[in-house]
Amino acid sequence: MLDRAGLDAGVAYSGQEALDWIETHGADIVLLDMMMPDMNGFAFLRLLRENAATRDLPVIVLTALADEHSRRECAAAGANDYLTKPLDVKRFLEVLDGV
Image: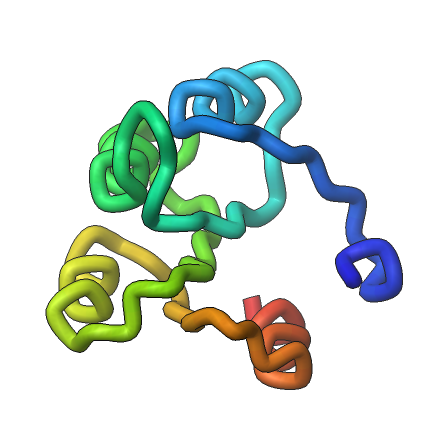
C-alpha cells in the first residue's frame, strides 16, 4: 500500500530498532504501532519528541487501542494523527496526504 502511494518504507520490529533506523537513515514520517516488544508506543513517541533532531518528525499512530484515553495520551505526547485497526485505507491515505 505504501509503495502504491509512492512512499519508500523501512520497517523496524522494536522501538529501539526504529530509533536507530531514524538516527542512521533519517525519516520523513513515522507510522507507529503502540504495542512493541521493548517499549510501548507512548515511550517511543516521548523519546522521539525529546530529541531535537526528531522533535518535528510527523508521527501517525496505527493501533488496535481504540479507547479515548490512549488517543488523548498520544495527542499529548505529540502524535500528529491517530488511526485504529482495522485500517481504513482511504482515511490513511488522506492522513498521509495531509502530513
